[in-house]
Length: 483
Length: 138
Image (cartoon, rainbow over all chains, first blue to last red; front, side):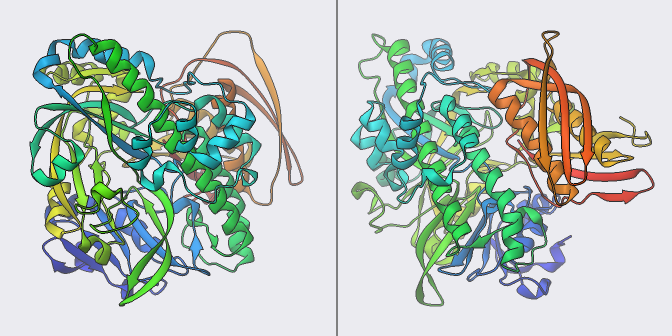
């Protein structure tokens, strides 16, 4: 178990586990955290898992750990690792089962005060139109040929079918479509799971939230994004559903033998991987990109129904109920990017698991209007607490492979949360604070209680203080839809 | 279930996901206990009727992979057909397993299980027989 004595303090917000900590580590682990957050982080196996991740073949520079990190099932949630092309590895477990789980933010011209008496109706309509919960199927029924288009084209497919606007796609990471998705590398079983689930939220920590822009810290960036104090915004958090889960399952299974073929020694079987330039690595990359495209399309279809819900609930009550897209980001993904390592540009596969891309100003990959401010970084808090909008910085490019945090990060197990917190009590408490909750189950609600998470404000202050993202706006929830 | 029982399962605290410790005198019973533990954590409730049966065949090189394959199959059947099972008859023939499972459509289920993972998965022998710790992504 890694102890605080094993860490070297770099500065108030950065710590390092040196490569010498374990003989099999190929790179050091750099942790972004305050001392106070470290005290929480050390209580689970996050840092042990980060040192395991640091043994992966082909790593460059360092494994990065975000302040919202928590223990996962191999690679820590809140970890970033980059492997050098062409021979470095790709690891499905370092991306996660929910491939391209991500967050989308929509903004509006709707003043909270104008609609505060209609929020219950809005919550009911959102809950009705946006399918959520375990095993829930969507409104769409895709045939195989349509699913293959979703796999290849992602959000482009939703644009062709009238679920998206050009502006939505422009303000989505990768325009909502990763090149190189290969449906032939995806199993029938994954496709069977994916067909009925497009446009569904799922369960667990996935949600649709209506928030009020509570405070603006970066007026220029907020103006560019259309974030206005006192106005409503919508945040959607979900991923590739059973489709992505099955793809990851299939490749973690297949890579159990691939690591033997490539003589890769690992401390944990869930970290199985294959060289990027191997047939196995290329197959997974093609399948993973397909799942990513499915997830982009999934969130886009949910946007369509969220817009419909706003129209049904608020038309006639406000003049303009339109929701415009601020941005859509992924926080479980493997991306081929170029980063400077020891002063030299290197092409790498950046594994981000529970971590968000946070490119600084000037990158061509960003929509033109965001190139001067940096990429929006969307950080949902725990239920009932604040969420945040940040922007990436030039420093994030140098110190975290252009990455930042993705949320608050759990500190308490689900079983402990259920023992300590009664779902009905939590519901009443949140409602007394003016938050309208629609949840699939009270037990599920208790598991996601704010007490089970770190303080998202402390997480955000850390990435801001460390310089890997800058604060733009703080959001306060008023409606939460959970599966 | 009490850890001193001949076979059983119990939840181990995990920050984000589920960890299940499972023990049994033999591999077949271990698989059954893992399935029962998984459905228990998911709070799966079966309809009283009609009863539905499935025959599932596995080939395996090592027991850990079989354990994950078995659970993965059950997760798939839960999501794709809304089924869960409470009776199991397992027949081993060399490195083949034929599982005859009986259950019903789900009346309700509280949790979505994304996957059964290989995280630190080792089936080990102990005084209690075989023990495994399985982490589920939820």
